[in-house]
Amino acid sequence: MVERVALLRAPNPSAMTLDGTNTWLLASENGDALCIDPGPAIPAHLERILAYLRRNELTLRAILLTHGHPDHVPAAPPLAAATGAQTYAHPFSAAPHDAALENNEELKVGDLQLVAIDAPGHTLEHLVFYERTSATLFTGDTILGTGTVVIAPPGGAMRHYQATLRRLLVEFGDARAICCGHGPIVTEPRAKIEEYIEHRQRREAELIAALEAGPQTIPDLVERIYRDADMRLWAAAARQMLAYLIALEAEHRVRAVRLDRPLTQREQAILNPDWVNVVGAEHAPLLEAELGAQLRLDAIYEYSLNRP
Image 1: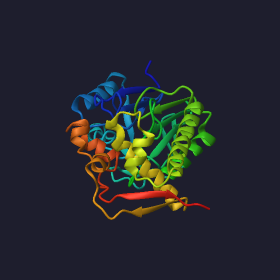
Image 2: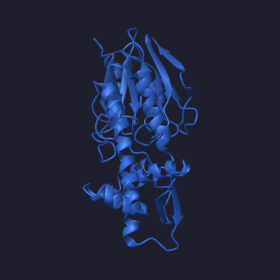
Image 3: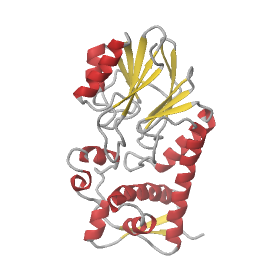
Image 4: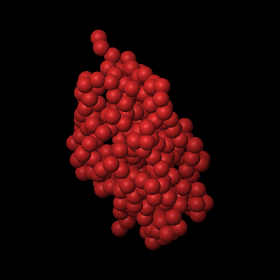
C-alpha cells in the first residue's frame, strides 16, 4: 500500500540545508499525487522522484512550492515537463509557476485537501500548506525539524515571521505533525511552535539587554550575544541581528547612527565575509540567497535604545 505522505530527501547536505532538502510526495487513494518542494535539480534526485511515482503507479497532478530559494525549486520545471503537473506558488514568487495560491485558498488533488497559508518571514513569498485529512502542516523553511530558521533582510522580515508563528499556533496548533523543509518530522507541533516563538522573544531580549550597556554596532552585538557560538556562524548571526534591529527601529525603540568611518577588517569579516571561504564554492550561492548577501553592509551603524 502506497504511503499517504512520503519523504524523499535530496542529496544536498550543507550547513544551511541540514541533511538535505525534504521533498514531500502526497498520494491520493485514486492514484493522483502532488509534490511539495521538489528541491534542487540534481539528476539523481529527480529520477528518484519519478521512479517513486512509477513504482507506486501515481500520476503527479500538482507541484507546490513553499518558497523560491535555490534548494527548493530548481527541480520543479523538469519534474513538470516529465509529468505534466501544474506548478503552484505564492503570488509574489519569482519562481516559474503556472498558478498562484492566495492565502486560505484550497487545492484538491483526489482526496487530498490542502490549504495555502500566507507565511511571510523567512521570505516574503513563503507559503505553508495544511493537509486537512491527515492534519499535517508542510512548513518549508518556516519551521525546521532541527534548529532554528534564518531571518535575513532584505527577503526576510522578523515581525512578519513572528506573526506567522503566532498564526500557526492559534490556527494549527492542534496539527498532528509538521513536515519541514529540512530535518525530521515534528510529532509535537504545538510544542515546536511555542519553542520557536519563545526563542525569538529570548534573542530579542538578549539584544535589548546588550544595548542597555550602551551603543553597539552589529559586530559588537554578535560578539557579545553569540560569543559561545562557532565563529563561522557569526555572519548569519549578524543578519539575524539586522532583522531584529530593523523591526525595533521601525517601532522607535532603537535608533541608528551611521559612523563616519570605513569598516574595520574585523567588521568586514562579520558583515560581508567571503561566503566561499565560509562554506565552499558549492554551497556559497545558497548561503548568499538565505542570508540576503545581495544586501552588502558597507556602512557601519551604531545602535542605541530610545529612552522614554
